[in-house]
Image 1: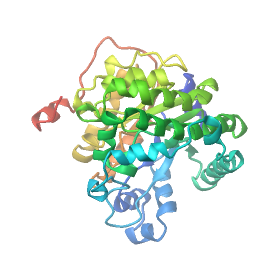
Image 2: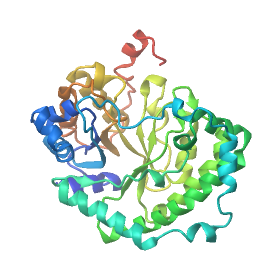
Image 3: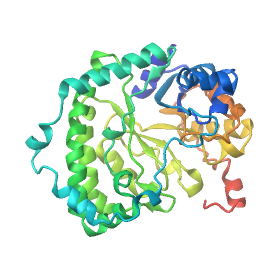
Length: 379
């Protein structure tokens, strides 16, 4: 079975030969060079193609939007640093919202359908040209909502405005979401035209390790309706949409599914997230949830051994009823501290796991759980 068929069948709940895998989120120039089997100097001479070569070498079936480090000392791909927003008050958001159009007609007047269609087609054409046979999984963050206004205003001003000026924040989300909805309409058509794997990965960080960053009720009033609006054209086409889940997302999972997400990605199990309580929730599209998970960037990958990494994947294989709907993928971008052998072990292991769909009566705990407790992490 080739990768495209494996991915598509797993997304649609059909038989596959083994659990599929997804890459694109491996960090560290040295790590990627090692995985590619080349020197750091050779990697730095062409980071983009070297990162692709690294993923091909470890046998991934597909990639989301490729993140790759371009400098030997690079440790992150992006960060919001609050000191850059000193002096910005929440009233800046109120003022900005007042400058935006008030009607859908005015907002959509600036949307260029032909240009967006061309950009999307070019993205997939480039991926199919460059990615050495690994399938592109659609991964467009603007289709999962526009929550993080902190990129523009900083955390303090944004979070304060959510409390002080909720309608202004909601207006900004709504205005930006209208363009995203139109983009989603175009992408929905491209799944047919380009014969894409029927998956989309998106969704913004709504939670930290303590739970939602803002009131869930505020999100239900102002934010989630805009996400549902964006995703609706894709839901109508039965695309399986997988939501990024950083932090303690337990209070918001039902809301995510109500928006049209039919899969979840990530999970920080060290925060007490219990997948046995999540796996039977019903998605809008498909009979069962999909899960992009298995490789923890906070536990097994950086601090464990290849045996620990395989054990973590085996546990995910167990609670997904023998791998049903499971795609092995990191919980976030792997760090420079992750041993390459752990990444190799994880991606190699999923190729040995059959998908049975059989539910076991036992509920084994997270294999790393005792170590998190010993380290003082919340479990």
